Amino acid sequence: MNLPVINHPEYVAKINDDNKFPIKKFGALAEYLLKNRIVKKFHIPEECSINTLKSSHSLEYINHIKNKTLNIKLQKKIGFPINDSVVRRSFVATGGTVLASKLALDSKLACNTAGGSHHAAYDYGAGYCVFNDVAVAANYLKNKNYKKKILILDLDVHQGNGNSEIFKNDHNVVTFSMHCRSNYPAKKSKSDIDIELNDNMEDLEYLNILHNNLKKLNSFDFDFVFYIAGVDVHFNDRLGKLKLTDEGVDKRDNIVIENYFNKKIPLCGVLGGGYNKNFDKLVELHAKLHKSCANYF
Image (cartoon, rainbow, N blue to C red; front, side, top):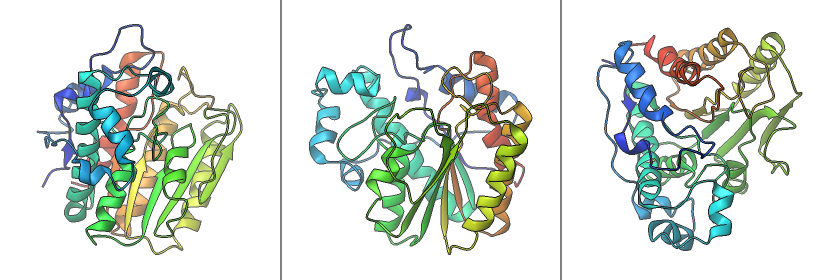
């Protein structure tokens, strides 16, 4: 058995070259995983259905995205133009995380090569996030009665404010966000558990804080975990303000994956953010998630 990994060529949407978001990383990551034999083949997702999206987003917002009628102000808040390619990518990438979560039920580990769009809330998108794929997938598992107590473990450098908003009244989904205090968004929402980190934090302190919080989380009775493995915690990231090394990112992922795999709790890994100044390094950092998971197959 091989690690199930989800990818679709249309994860690479067509946006202007001057857009700050490194959209081409999704295609480059797929090539890297195949070239380095971390993955033999990909599972190809379908578009997420509107019915599934409705569990986490308003129908009005979904239709504005689908019909490309979202006003310019809200498009600017997202950071992407809502064109045909971006719309297609948004539906497919969300479907990718739903598929990864379903596959993780049997394989215990599965990963998307996109996802982690944690700034998207019920009726708006923000911060390069159109649909909140993790929220959609978590609600899918709950609504199908596959799982009852879900953890969203968000280690992106930015707070997962969309997840905390969507699940603020849901006691069956615990939102955990360990992020840099001074990073976006300026106005934070309230997760179930927020761990705010100081600027320029390095490997040792970061990993100690993570280790201690995982021990606390292990006292909960979770039966599924979504892991948002943002690599914008790296010292060379354009948007992050932490100072983790390559080794620090590697250890972080290994600690998380080992913790839940040993407890036989299914885990779905998604990319989260990453804006490294070196594009090749960015791809390599994102691949650490898949490498960590593939070690168990």
